[in-house]
Image (cartoon, rainbow, N blue to C red):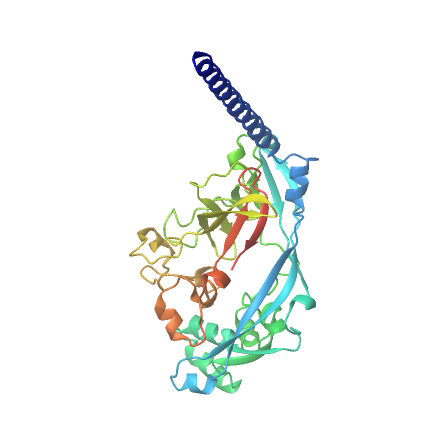
Length: 385
């Protein structure tokens, strides 16, 4: 019996020793891997990291959906708008970085990021050059907004009558996206040359860039890899009313630092949104057998000022706050009355959903998410909505 006990104790001790050695080896191995990842995550000319950053390899697609207004006459009489969703119209997006220059002994990198969109008919519901959409006449509404309570208000109203402009317009998908010459804007352009006579949601955004960026290379710290420190020569924005809201935080959303933890916020600056925002950890999953963390926008990002008082800086003019889930970006869109939200007002105040018939917000179809490998920060899958 004593011999049996000694054998048992010996086996147990050996097992614990092997387990301890295994844990130690695993820890050392993980430490080595982490160190190699940190050292390899630097923007240096001639490296794979730099090449992937300069010309991102995964295909990126932009899909556009439109809400077609089906009861325009009733809306003019005060009824609730009834809309039907039409889409997607899919475009392959190419976004290489050009005019790349290394600055400050390699600690910073400047670059332009032109985007080109090529239509993908096989992934679309129709022909954007043919399909018609009835939607808000944004140029007319913008002109009325520009001239409200000014000496030009009466003249604008006369032009609207003369050109028989209505609250709604019918245009092709291509026109709405990439631009068409508007008669009203053309007339205003004669008096104010700074006003573009061509209107389009993505006017002059195909084959062009949105200004020069300066990024940190990650040379000083892997945590700063590809973080934006300047845009258009400025270290902060000027549209909003608080220093925090005007901060340029994070990357451009195409690359992130490695060794991401579940507890951190991922910051992204978007010139389209005219602001920075952040994503939070949502869940763990696998993509092609490789572990990934899913990050989604924090509910605090577009929360009303009662829930998140820090968002008061995005209310321009002060006190003009549309509510949870909606951002007024008129201040950075030449005064055009443009508001941003998730599709179908997902996670927005219920009043927005109820004000338009045809809204059906669901997490599965309307939530933005990013699936990222926590070690390498490889971008597996994502949808910006």
